[in-house]
Length: 335
Ligand code: SF4
Ligand code: MG
Image 1 (spheres, protein in one colour):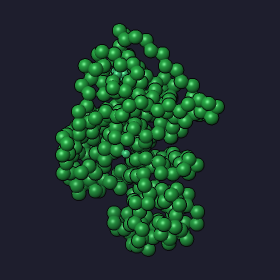
Image 2: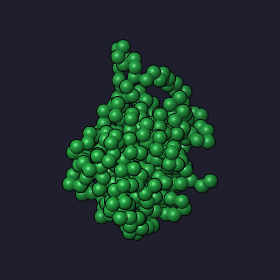
Image 3: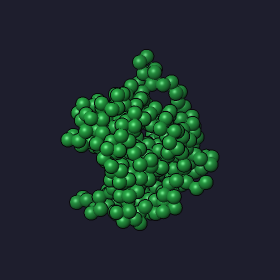
Image 4: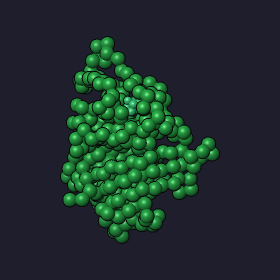
């Protein structure tokens, strides 16, 4: 079966008063049907811009895009704004980080969820409201009938995120793009929302593209992980591969910065030293070289090739070269 989404050689540049920011450089990946794929990286690594390119939401005035984004064979980059509007919602649903700003404070929650049915399916307002109540129930909102008549400010952060998930699901999209869906929530609510996404993905046969800065949240939700750094993919693999056999020094850094059980017993929480690459002037060689503890001469002058460690595990790092010194990095996953 073909992939649901195929992104090939995606490049996105932003024209700013300081120059051209090369936000995404030659990014290729796919999302299979019913698959959950996570894109992980620090803020500014291009993960949100990748999501926005798929949704056709990049600012038209200053962004230049090239490459292909095929959804069931159709190139989304070649569609008009009108055609993209149709696809957003019906084929691709989306949820973002901040549930408060994404909701309209002056409309009841039920009306907001119902809107998609009225606008896209031409359903009567009364029937749409009924369907909205059903959806609120599906996303785990208690007493959905009463809650549908309330306003966003009467909901907690976690409940608001459930409302947004209900809105994203209204038209039964094949792909749900979730950009930092749990970042604003506390840890317990965060795991409830992730469980809900996983459960809905299963029941509704959706694919999910989960965008996050936190490698910790992907382990129980995603099947595959794409690690992005400075606008490029540096490593990709199955969750199992990335957590048990990570190969890229940046992935090592992300893993080391995860909170660990032993942190309480005096272990330290490491963070990756240095600041992310300047995308106005990206390094010529490996973009991670200025922060990498293993930088070799070749890293500064030449972009690393992509090495396949297995059919679904790839990394771009010169340490994979036969002539490179052997670096052993070990990590015990305790949390
Ligand atoms: Fe570090 Fe070199 Fe690998 Fe880049 S290519 S991550 S600088 S070892
Ligand atoms: Mg972001």
